[in-house]
Image (cartoon, rainbow, N blue to C red; front, top):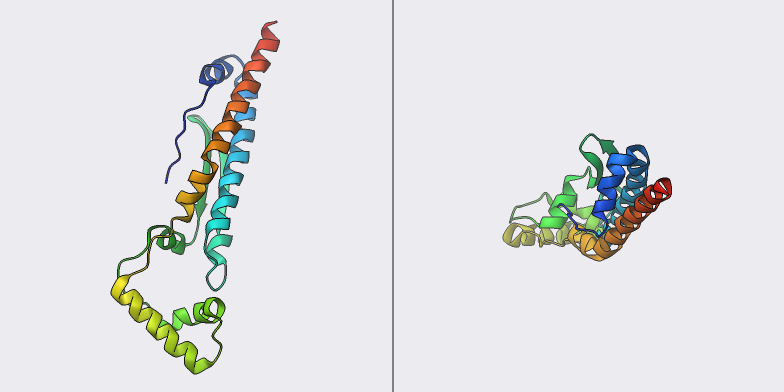
Length: 167
């Protein structure tokens, strides 16, 4: 998923990139770091924990300055993040793989009952798949206004810096 936004003050950023590129890059990197950490936190909070919390723990962010501009990425190294986001088509998962989930999420601990419930869950997934839960999409929706404000403040900071240098 990509987040593309329009902000006020783009003229000031463009001028900053021409007249004070080092300063502007520094301000944009700081703004991008704040924005990506905000999106990362929100996505992690929205991610269902499942049996281990591994998927939520795998969500990370990174910021880099490239010749094309400052780039911020929030992602996960776990394939399960995609499955939780988009859901899955019907498929028969191994019921053994669902046993830790049955214990952690459903609170069932009797070994025989764990096996039986895991099999029933696998059979339901085989018939219906899993629904899309959209934790990343919800994170983007929840933080969009804050992220726009972060970059508008950065644009104002660059414009003020250039105005001080012109005075």
